[in-house]
Length: 335
Image (cartoon, rainbow, N blue to C red):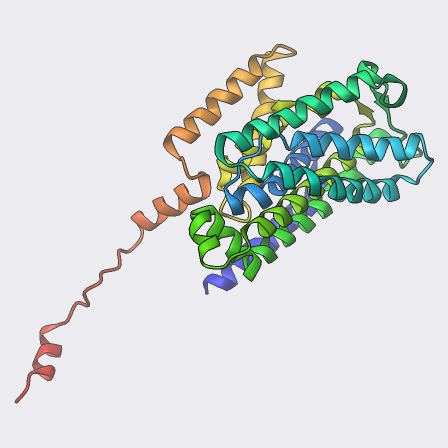
């Protein structure tokens, strides 16, 4: 029954996502939905390494920016078709992530966080300074892949493209979660030294998860470049983007398939609401931070585990001792 209810809930969720553009009241709401799906792709991609291994990377904006700029440069400088450029950019980032992961994953804890942040800052300086290639602080304009479409239809197409990419990342996370590889990653998360002592190839497993996470993040960045069409290194290589990925995953629950998706929905809606309330000021960031702080204080494991715990407490309590009636005792009495 529980398995059937999960499949039914999944089918209902998929149907609601697919039907949303048809009932969206205007192009602004649809574009906000695209942003939320984009956040969900990034946070779920981050969760491939963060949720399974426990390595908290605040620098995943590096792969987001590399995917976006890689896609844009392949289109504008090399004349590669849009979606072929997206795939090639993801492949390039996967290759680059190997030496980066080999260097970064040799440290743990706060040292790993510092290394991940340093990478973003280095790339920000490089892409700002390399004006003749990247456009520098003036940014880079990406040609639209569907120039004949009006803006509402453009949002509609990319809503489904981002939904398809999100489904791919979720499928990858679900597959890893049920594999021997996933068991090894969870062992690393719980106690890396014990996992290594028991024969788990910890470094190889961490590196594989790191590269896969970076690749999916790059694909999310490249898709964003094709949708938005205007790149700025200050935004593409922003620590804030990497922080959002972490906070959205933690908000929903890093150990659950749909935890980052739920976190992206909450954060995305909150950001849009606060932007509407407070305009172009930065107060929307303060309001969002307060919201996340409240959730972390009262639901430190995320929304999904907190709700499950609440339902379990309200439901029928199971006892380790079976209650036996007087009639059953009479039957069991030895004559």
